[in-house]
Length: 63
Image (tube, rainbow, N blue to C red; front, side, top):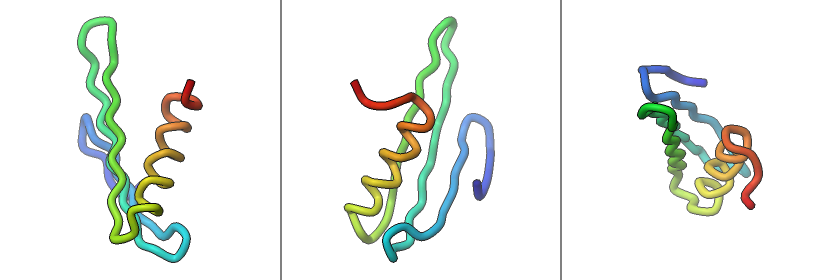
């Protein structure tokens, strides 16, 4: 984790030899919580993998 600033959590590092950053936004609206996970990198495959890993940790595997 690189930073937190409600409602955001961000992190950066290396994945498969590429720099990646991930931003997670969690917003509660009544009884529901909306979660957005964004991955960024100059390597689109690394960005996608980082995003998917965090999304799985946060929300569970895709159904």
